[in-house]
Amino acid sequence: VQLQASGGGLVSPGGSLRLSCAASGRVRSVNVMGWYRQAPGKERELVADITSGGIPNYSDSVKGRFTISRDNAKNTAFLQMNSLKPEDTAVYYCNADVRNLYGFVIRNLWGPGTLVTVSS
Image 1: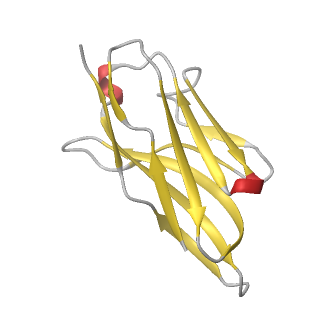
Image 2: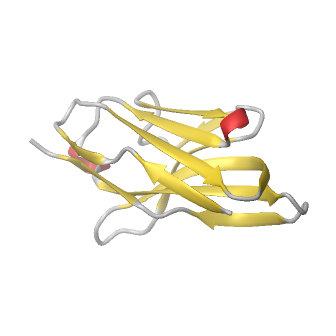
């Protein structure tokens, strides 16, 4: 079981990006899926997460600008980032609790980071 993230890149302030995170392998189901980020010299922080039932949770710094969603049939979560600011620049990491085909829950699984750079 692994998480695969995509969608990072360079964008101008005020622009938008969409990140995707897919759980693959011997996956039965995915519980909470979330995005964290880590800026240079700072600790990793929660950006947003979403339950399997679709209930989102956002950090105050991204409320109103970012939207997290998911497609349970595809074990995929999305992070739509609008009105991006230079302070959103960071490596973004996907995180999830995954139940594999054997019924074992893999908690706090991390995907590889994807770099988001907001700069003019």
